[in-house]
Length: 500
Image (cartoon, rainbow, N blue to C red; front, side, top):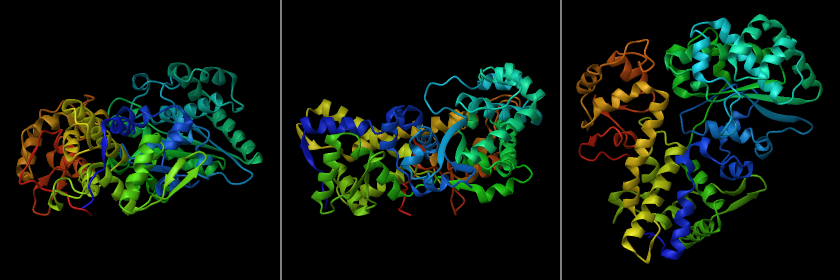
């Protein structure tokens, strides 16, 4: 049995502090450092991230917490493409944000409230002008020369003032499009490519149902522009559930299937990302990682990149040894309590088996916080960095963070939280339908209204695909631990997640 490494508190404290800091701002990419060097040292270019850089990849899909915004920010640093070896010899490649914020504090795009006030949700003509105007405004802000009508160029210098530039772009739509044609021609002559990336598009308007008209317009426009232009290339970063929704259907949407990449994560990549952050987080934590892997006979192999920092080799034995050095091989006295290496990703996975970087890092950081508080209470001098109870303490908090993230983007989930409080899973399907049917939903025109009030459709078309609930073969409904704690649900008989 591989037991955890025991250290005096003077050595444990800086290691635990560094471990707690691997998920700043509860692991949200928006709270990662604005320093490009730090961003790159924490970033792991997985195979799906590299596929997303393909010039033919228009649509990049992923759940919240899969790393969509992190990729967007890394590429926007100016060094991201070079770090990922995405630049061909003799060419220049850079990213601009067609929508979204590369840095944490930016005020150069219209607010959701102003957009809602000025554009009716189903006004396709205004949405076309909106996306064209935003593209031209962001290009101007990056110093690109555009042969625009003077009135449009002046208005677009204040991109946050939608009321100032939208009427001008509507009036001169074709001249603005021609100006972009001219830019693309000049870019071809210079062997220069501009990647136009779109992030946070699910925040363009306040309501869930109101998202789909602007998203349909954006996707349809770039299907046309992708064929029209050679050196202006799109990357539209979108939540998977929005893409899969029937509300997003539009003519030719199926053509995007060949230009789609989904950001997926395997358990091994999650641990590689964790160990990469640990190696680049400071000397004390990095030394512990190396000592822990060597202690059990699996020394960690590393590469050192001038931009990405230390990158650990994919070695499951070494990663398992590092986890054992942190908390022990098992989440208790014997294997029946679960192997620690499996337990951590299994308990942050959703009902579709997807364990994502953000909740994974959050749980590690929360366990480190619990360990520091526990040590302060006990005054223990010699001990392991973490014990299983630190993870048990962290799970409810990680669950609450995860559910709140979903509620921020789908406000209609809040009544569902109240409807399930105090229940037990697995739950009979009839009881689930009854609880959903008893919710006093707001009217359709309310921003908090759900996509449907029909309990069956809500279950099958929304709660299931987003991974909130699992429909078991025996007909009962289960909820994974990453949501169960926040929903205040008990678990009947202690149903354990098994390795897949």
